[in-house]
Image (cartoon, rainbow, N blue to C red; front, side, top):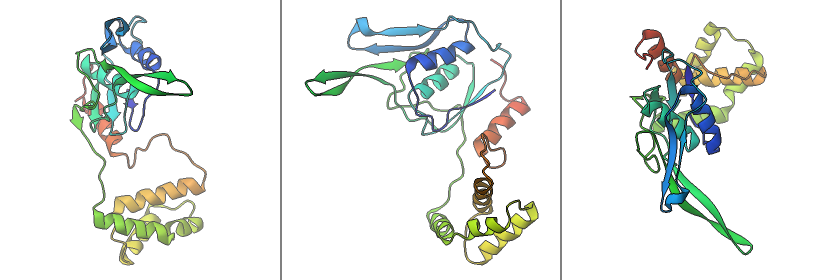
Length: 229
């Protein structure tokens, strides 16, 4: 199983506890610890694991993974149930309570979330077991890419080539680079693919062709490097 929590800002605590409960027979999922002991809580698994221990799992995270998504990734990592890959997460692990004063109010941080190992994630985040980051453009390449987007060369070409072959795409990439757009092949090809999908009203759920983190997750599972825990 591959769980994609990238750019997932999180949600309500009860939801992440319900999801995590599918992976464990018993034990701590997450807890809260703060200044007032009577408000501290510990949430445990009790449903019974839906996925056996022989089921290998990879969790993908990035800098946009926050709050509840960090709790799920961290709990699976802490309890040795999954291998986490990607980038260190955002680090939002505080519990806030809204206090009303007249017509207004304020948010008060009353406690912090802790994972089964006892570690906190607030302002720290979850460090992946394996660092995998999407390749990025240099400053100069970003300027060239911005110029390419503004030129609208790609949308215009796609209008005339709604279902281009791989060879046609390669030749168009060569043409753009020959015209002075010094952008790596992969970024131009990805932009063309996205524009083809947009004009054909196609939405993709996952990207086996250009998603480098997903490609690594699949490789880890297929190679056996991610063993069941």
